[in-house]
Length: 68
Image (cartoon, rainbow, N blue to C red; front, side, top):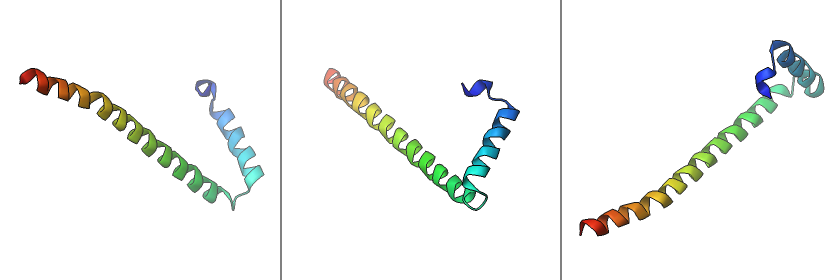
């Protein structure tokens, strides 16, 4: 969907956002979006690492049993 969005489309979206929120609210809006994305990325990384730990730990235990 976003692949077909060219420069004119992006400019139109920016103009509409500027009209709706005004120039004084844009920095605040940008910070909020940035914080939200950062929080989402950190949560996703944590979830992936927890899942990897859940998968890897039983494999390590099986290897330890087979070596004994």
